[in-house]
Amino acid sequence: MNSVQSTSSLTVAKFGGTSVADFQAMLRCAHIIKNDTSNRLIVVSASAGVTNYLVRLSQKNIPVNEQKDIVENIRVIQVNITQHLSSEVEAALNQEINSLLDELTQHALTQSLQYSTKTTDAILAFGEQFSSRIFAQVLQSIDVAGGYFNVQQVMKTNSLHGKAVVDINELSKQCTLLLAPKLVDKVIVTQGFIGQDSHGHTTTLGRGGSDYSAALLAEALNGTNLSIWTDVVGIFTTDPRITDQARAIKEISFGEAAEMATFGAKILHPATLIPAMRRNIPVFVGSSKEPEKGGTQIKKEVESNPTYRSIALRREQTLVTVKSPAMLHASGFLAKVFGVLAKHELSVDLITTSEISVALTFDNPSGSTQSLITNTVVAELEQLCEVSVENGLSLVAVIGNGLTGAKGIGQSIFETINDINIRMICHGASANNLCFLVDERDANFVVEKLHNTLFS
Ligand code: ADP
Ligand code: ASP
Ligand code: MG
Image (tube, rainbow, N blue to C red; front, side):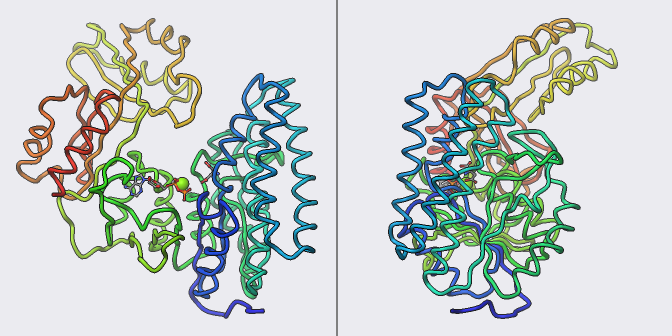
């Protein structure tokens, strides 16, 4: 059996849902790991589709029959993988899977009796529990000395279920103590997305959070590289699902990639680059299906800094406009508005102001089932001013370099889409980004058309 060579380089490699969707996909990932001995810590997502099933299972009032169907569907996804392993390993894994499924059923029952976000997180964490256990065995099946590690031992968070905040000092301490020694002679497989609060309860970092987990672990372990293996051959000039004209980018700076992630490019969880930038850890993004095609390098210094690098799209945006004549020449009005928003833990995304009104945007996390701006929030704001709330909007972000200073930018962008109604524009705060809101129905068309103009 290959053991890990002692080397000064330490790559944390993250494999997303489609990369661990079935046995063949897992096997491809295992070979990627075997072929590069710097890969030492492996962070996996749930097998594709499993977290979506778990999200449904964690909702209120799911009929018992549907609960059973979901648990069975998840079981089938997982045992379809384990059947390819030796019969001994298969039997042992299936036993573990079945007892985890019993636990999951128990949580679903608790949830239907008394709904809580704590139980939601307990349910959502199962996908990564299954995939990490199975993947550790797939690695061993090709003679890579692999071990399994429960990330909850180190990924300590607060109790904000669904978007828990990681205690990076504690993570670093626990990694040095519990995880680093294991990496000396084994490739360790662990879970993305999940953590644990100080009460010992399971927490999650938000949808798509495995990228962020991997980056945090790379930082805590003084990693030399972070690899994000996914289903596309790198970061593209825009989401390749929107236009087939999109093309892979060879290299991109931390700043540009961070803007892309923040402004909706699903390829990376929005917070992924924060830990990488803190420690200057280069990040590679590539396809686990076609590793030979290379991918995108994200790093501090890049060779070229083009004005236009990419276009990101973030859907489900809410625009809130607050208006009050009392704002004219008055101080303290905005502080009161923000006080209401802070009280409800609402984070403002973009902001533009005029003399007596302020427009604010809010990002609805994808998959959220209720509007962020509740009637209570509106009622409290209405004590201060007139309020209007618009949903069904999309944010288009043009990412590049020197966007605050270069000439002709407004013309290139807005002349291309002069037949589109633009609801709000934000320009000037970042040299890497110019963004604007459009009607959800126009979003794909706008991105496609802009892409044609800026990248043809
Ligand atoms: P994983 O499960 O591996 O984390 P995701 O589905 O979260 O994968 O992210 C990969 C997807 O991100 C791609 O399939 C692609 O559709 C989408 N995507 C959005 N914007 C971009 C972009 N600029 N470049 C590449 N992929 C993008
Ligand atoms: N499994 C989680 C999700 O689907 C986390 C991830 O894949 O990054 O959101
Ligand atoms: Mg993802």
